[in-house]
Length: 430
Image 1 (tube, rainbow, N blue to C red):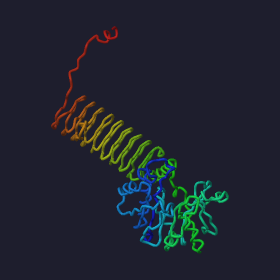
Image 2 (image 1 turned 60 degrees about the vertical axis):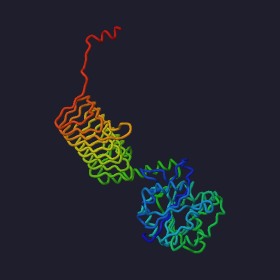
Image 3 (image 1 turned 180 degrees about the vertical axis):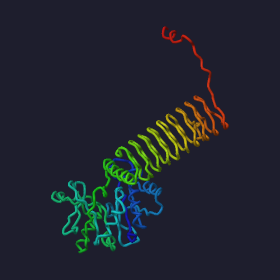
């Protein structure tokens, strides 16, 4: 389909989303809905135009974070509202034009390729639904489309039709250039409908054929409920792919994985885990209710109930429950429980006792903690960065480390313990 141009419609306000955010910027599995439409379109074409209107500058700036070779076109919504108005006056490199919607995050390139496999001047996606309310109805006869009726313009009898418009079209041989100038907005919505091109072309004897598609793949998102249901489908796809590649998942319905996460080898992902954008899990065990954000975990075990925050690398490391790691590199480290390790580098053979904190923030700036090999950090230790603890060091429990510790040393800071005999009875008698 390299000889096909793609137009993606993303101009709508999306009032049913009940949100100040543009509809196409609502996220599914870590990415905006429009991101998925563009990403799949790029697999098919080198000529992609995205039509914007509502909060156009915001949508464009967000998409430019992902793509640098997409054309953005502002719809003349005041003079030419509607889907037909959205595609008017768009210059395309090829005669064939595939029109997509920016609120269909579940579509994929393999489905879109099927449009070019049918013989027709216009190919239109159609879904058969038991409940067709809310959709434009499609009148089909002898496997050709006669016309499309928007629901607001449909009669009671026409609303009984079960074939509905899925909203994606392939126009061949300059059909848009021929019929867009002939569109009228003399209808209930006072809009220019791209669907009217179908009727005009049909009246002139052109062949319009339906492509029957699965509702799941062409699901449009118009509300927060639709958004949630689409995410369920996306999550099931993501997790199915990983399990087919050999990843073990416990209660996969409870696991959340962003779309760009990578999981390799026979990793184990337990229930309640969240793997967020940028996470890479290699031959590791992520235990229940842990969160991994934009970090690499390799040959390691994390959790349960632990959090690895962005820009961290864990290799050959064991992180236990209630441990938080942020922007740190841990190689061959054990941190069994109840610790915060931020802005740190910790080398192999080192054991981090419960309650250890790297105090990395002084109120203005972040500072780094470097811990060498075979260091034993006792429980309830505070390490005030910037500080370097060299190899083969013992840090006694309860110590506050506020200066560098040389190789082979013991670091200890405590006040002497005092006992007062007989105090218990005296205290409670009083």
